[in-house]
Length: 122
View (cartoon, rainbow, N blue to C red):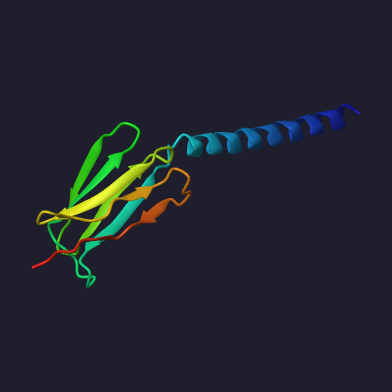
């Protein structure tokens, strides 16, 4: 009978350890530790990249702003964003501005891709 109790105790310890591990992983994800990646491209209305555009990313909670100057391919990248914050993103090129887009904290994607269109004009 005692051997049976030891086996049940070992099973209980393993189950509790697994539950703690899952809870820890869920808490880590909930706290935003894993982060989110925002990528995209700054383009004109003919889908051509707009090099040297400046992309602005605003944290709606703190109002902190990050910027990114795109290269020849028009691609921008903001890694390690909090999962628990809304962000607003827009781009500027030669004095013209794209529409402002929102990355919602309720969007559960790890990678969000938003292309920003600007009427580059002549």
